[in-house]
Length: 324
Figure 1 (cartoon, rainbow, N blue to C red):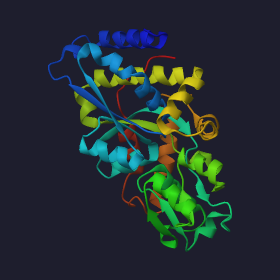
Figure 2 (figure 1 turned 120 degrees about the vertical axis):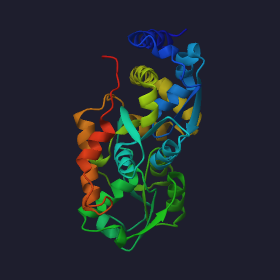
Figure 3 (figure 1 turned 60 degrees about the vertical axis):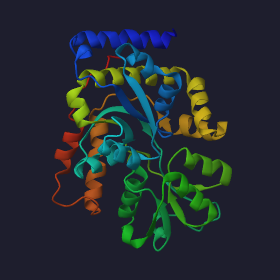
Figure 4 (figure 1 turned 180 degrees about the horizontal axis):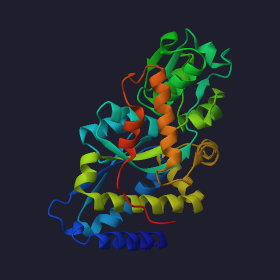
């Protein structure tokens, strides 16, 4: 057993002792369905090393992994009950909650600059204002979409001033490089790949408008299995800490899944991904709230919605994380 595995086993056992009846509950799940995504590098390390499988083997609980290509897909799967845990941007989780998706945000897996507005190397587009009348690839219900809406708002424009071309993130990158669209609301690692391999330009960046990477759980699952949720988060936390001190291993796991070259992976993981956050607190709440208020101002969220109340409802989850 590796040092990391032993630490996780000990931590999981300690949490179980806090609620000794929980592990023996008759209604314990037979499986836990959780997503992995290229925008969530910690999830890739978790999956590759089988850390959750090791934690729940003693309970006879199977771990089912589902790949999600964007926050919108993770949220669709959560709403349908096909996954129990899903990784998204905080802003996307808030919009989903407002629209009736019964989820709780319980953990922060990264503080990324994973989105920017991108165009080709020879494009005449220099500013957000230059997007007026242009075709822009975007994935609705994701942080890049919300980033685009806020950027347009800051430039005195709305989505009505552009032609949104609705594509999943990988297809948006392909459409940009082919010249099918004029710009793209990008997402790493596809965005980093477009920069390095195709000379694409990030013509509008605003790191503080990228909301945190958030792990969400179905509200019903949290209500029925709070002990299970805490154990999942304990494993996530150990994996996040391990990632901080074992970059080469994280990078190797990431490359094994994505097949991307070193330079692309380093740009995403080294330059634009901060893994030092975990607990959801004031910084995460403020980033999500500000995104929600901006979307309300832009007309994406209805004027009569109480954004603050919905933010509090999204984040008000009684979960435990081990002390640092």
